Structure formats: C-alpha cells, structure tokens
Image (cartoon, rainbow, N blue to C red):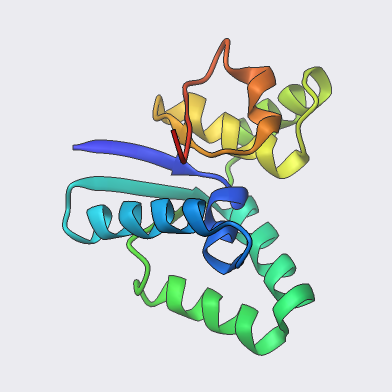
Length: 138
C-alpha cells in the first residue's frame, strides 16, 4: 500500500474556497485512504499549524472540532508525534533550506519514513533533491 506524508498546506486546502482544484484532490486522497488504498500521515507539528490557522481564520470552535475529529479517527490520517531525532533533523533542515519550521518537521518525517510528501506548497521545491515531493494537482 502506498503511504504519503501530508503537509499543512495540503490539509488546509480542504478549508480554502479559493483552492477548489486542490481541495478536490485532497478529498479524493482522503477517499482513497478511507477505502484502504493509501496510508496518510501528518506530523504533530503540522497538525498544530493547521489548528492555529483554523482557529485564527475560522474560529476556535471550528479548530477544536477539527482536532477532535482527527483524534476520533473521522479523518483517515494518522498523526505522528515528535521525537528527539526528528526535532534535531528538522532544526538542521530549517537552518539549511528556505522552508517554514513546520515544513522542516514534515520533511524530516518524510525522510525518516521514506514516504513522499504530497503538497503544492512551493517551499518544498528547495528540498526535492533529498525528499520525494508529489504534487497535489498535476
């Protein structure tokens, strides 16, 4: 079974009305995961980034609901906690590449698990030499 790492950008496309094509791609990906065709992983730091952005833009109830739905397994996505090794690698990635700190954790998780990242976030262009990035929309 194929497995992918999701970054914050990808999940946030679900809630952005301006990103209709990307939203459809995420819904399709979630449907594949629901059917057991793919496995999806999201780092805890990225989950936190999604939470604070939803909180800020859509309100606390919405953000809290998203987090509870994720914990309850209503999204076919496994949240992966941070460990010391990944935190150390993320800090090195952040120091070397023009990516956000949350993206550095996503990249470190992808390297650790050897799973590609699915995203359309242009920040990932700078790390394509050492992590596989699959575009959300071709």
